[in-house]
Length: 252
Image 1: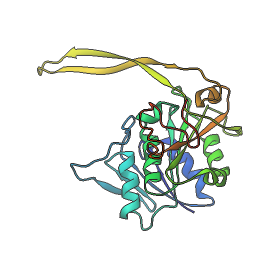
Image 2: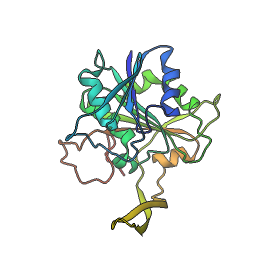
Image 3: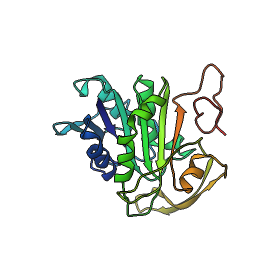
């Protein structure tokens, strides 16, 4: 299978390299990823300026754009073929529940689905080192046929897992997106150039506790997967949910 890897952590991130190692044994793997970190870009696209693309190796390209840009470029001529599968990640940090709205990792998988290509977003659900990606990368490679069997048009798969030792094996459970409310803090200061500057500082996330949600599953030590609609379902007219709907049921 010809697989495109991308992410929002950047071309040289450890997570994407772990996926490349795990998948290359049985598949033809190509990488088109941002040239630096693009976390929190959501589904932004570069519409008003040209993208810079650099060939990094035989099967790898970096791009000045966003994760969604990378999928669009790869599907429309940067690669000598259209990928059969897009995997985005492994992200450093969770993409649980409402994170899907903000996540560049999820946006790349969503863009794949919008292009009619199976898309999978993969995230390691921790912000604290050490970041150990190999067990999760192996799960993706070992269960790839299963994840593909779950795919339907206009849906992408979102996977999250806690940190595990490299030789551990995850138990996999289906979940629905949790509702997460972000309690951000900002710090301001006035610069000598006449501008006021603002920085996001450490905050916290308040999660609605629900049994069977992706956060609940990950907190129990399992790997979660969720089937997420790539866009609001026209058949139901649903476009007002905060988090994306789960394929086959409404988001909680």
